[in-house]
Amino acid sequence: MLSENIQAVYGRISRAAISAGRRPEEIRLVAVTKTVKAETIRESVEIGLREFGENRVQEARGKISILKSQISNSDIKWHLVGHLQKNKAKTAVELFEMIHSVDSAELAQALNDRAKNIGKIQKVLLQVKISDENTKHGISERHLPDLAETTARMENLKTEGLMTIPPLFDNPEKARPFFCKLRELRDKLCAGGYKLKELSMGMSNDFEIAIEEGATIIRVGTSIFGERRRQAI
Ligand SMILES: *Cc1c(COP(=O)(O)O)cnc(C)c1O
Image (cartoon, protein in one colour):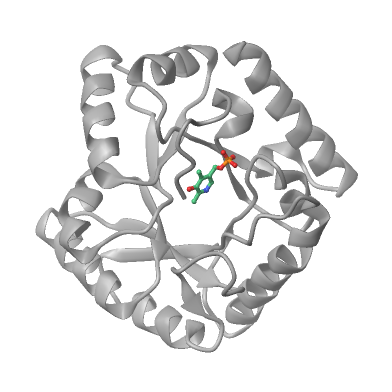
């Protein structure tokens, strides 16, 4: 079942990319493994997945250490897609290839300090709150330029793009304006001289729309691993 699900997701990615005139390889699939057991994650590595996303540092830490002891594959990358508290910055920097949820200068500073301590350049995305209906977290559109300027100056952070979580709609088409907006914000910052390549947007129910609007990273849980018992965003 896992294997069929993964094939189906790749099929959806290909069709959406091609219909938007993009190459499917431009889109990175981050498999979101919150609430998924380490054993299942290991199976999905055997099937071919290499990038995983977690939304809680504690949960991720346990699973990452189990998996490290079981698989030698060093090209597995972990993404933090959920909200991060400053006091977990140290562990986050130790565990994650990319942190998608930077939404304040204070958090960015904490990550920069921790990254500096261990001699790492930490890749981050700035999480933007485009609506205030759904998510508590994210920087507002108005304050985004300041945060982009601040993180660009931090020597141990590499700010690679933007991330957003639109409200959950029954009709995924309704998410389109949010994805479109994130791309416009990214393009505007790029026109101002920033190098922000990535757009992390699109989840199980709406990633085709996100791909049409320029997503470079999609974060997919349910379509790969099935329904979660606790819905935790
Ligand atoms: C859970 C989660 C996802 C994946 O959601 P699905 O609808 O299961 O694909 C993506 N992004 C974030 C931030 C999440 O917390």
